[in-house]
Length: 84
Image (tube, rainbow, N blue to C red; front, side, top):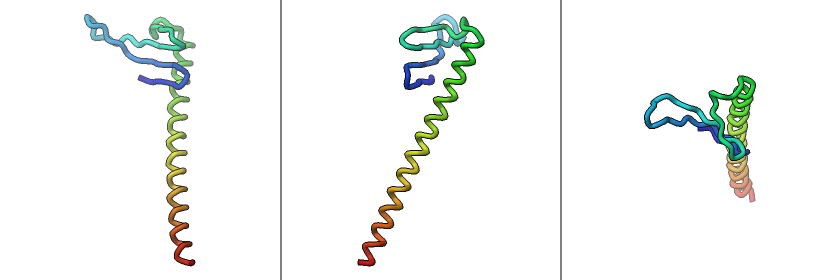
């Protein structure tokens, strides 16, 4: 399941009598069967999923950089204390 911050979800739903996957798009509170959407809409969904993945990756990178910066600042603080 992919969940985007602007209330966009795609997930596979299995019917109890059928093992096949029936993907559903939930967008702004409405549900749509993916298989019934146009190829243009399906392409838009794929692009949104890629964008969301990229945003999450870059958010994680920013978190790591922030942690690294804080660690380096703490190390510098300790080194400067030794000079006093």
